[in-house]
Image (cartoon, rainbow, N blue to C red):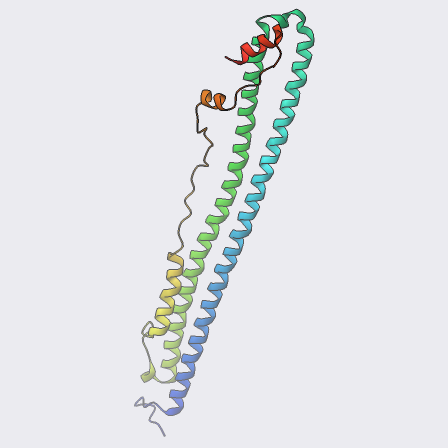
Amino acid sequence: MADYDSGEVTDRERLAAKRQDYIARYNSKSIENQLKQQFKNYDFADKQNKALADVQLKQNSRAAEGDRFEAQRNLQNATIGLLGSMNQAMNGSSVGNLMRMLENRNDADNQTYWNQLMKNNDAVYNAYNEALNQNNVARRDAASNAYKGLRDIQGDLAANLSNINPNLYERPGSNERLKNRGIELRNKGTDVKPNLASLSGYLMPDTPTQTARDLVPRNRLRGNDYFSTLINGFNGR
């Protein structure tokens, strides 16, 4: 018969303590598995959000392309109506003025729809980055909670061992296996890199305007009549 007051540890108490250690390891493994699954869920969400952003960017491009085409058709119709009223004015400098007007209007439309496309794309990028940021914070929170769970297990294990027999008491955190596992889970959170937002890039031409025109010259009329010569002269500017 063990002397309880002296703190003598019996075989029965050692068996109970051993089983408490098994339970603590099982609970710690459950927390570890839960954190691993949470990280997989956040990775899954990031993948879905990236696919959605890619589709939305394509949708924006299609919408901008459709709007730009409609603007070109409206400009064409307006030009046809104007040409019908010019009559003899088509023989002089009014042709050049009309061509410059169309060029400026075309540039203005390009700027308008380009800005709209960039605004829509920025909205997509911002929404995606916001979701990514939230998932990164959630990853760090999950790792922090897992670390806290491991510390709670160590505290519960120490309390249970002490209740079995005071001489079996182990200071919380002295169990190296549970301690190291907790540190590993905590580091999974600190290893999450911040997603720092940045401005969307803008396309810039690789060559000056004149160089581009030399590579792809403006349309030229092949006739030798006065009107063809007039148009080609304005196009050569």
